[in-house]
Length: 238
Image (cartoon, rainbow, N blue to C red; front, side, top):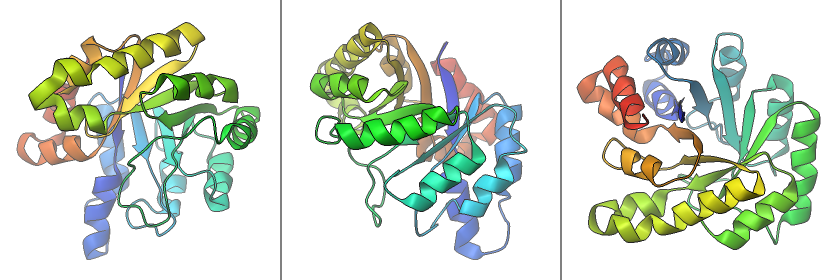
């Protein structure tokens, strides 16, 4: 079964645009769980332009499903936050400070020593680790060498070309998932997955454990409502 983790960054973006507490981020997270989401994802950035560090602390005691915190571990404030919160999973993403959104995975070979060290810090604290990677077999092999529990396949390339050449663009992801499973790595995925392209991705990815979806899901909820939207996404993962 592939779990759906709802990324609530966009809810925080809307809230922050006007100040105050509308929409209520904490209530949305709890509602998402109540409506069937099997996890909640947040990605706090240094400028706190959407999720604030205080949000992460406020969410922790309320959530009943898996809590996944994404971010760049080269920022000490992020490391301290994760070690303090102790979520079920931390996903390590090589973001720059001013990056609009995640746009590439780790070079797991060039960063092997660093990733090995920081992953051991999180694992020693009892936190499952996942690292953001492109569907490159060498990067998958490199990920295995770091000691990570899982990888998260960066799916923007797949989503961008889904409507024109899905059979071709899915191949690297299928191969990456097969190798990861052979190496004993869990497989997650995320970035621009949507109602349009999710089912096909799931069908062609071996033993996909979790998808993290935010932008498309929150956008769809404007039309369909949050409860119905989450059910539609869960249906794509069956």
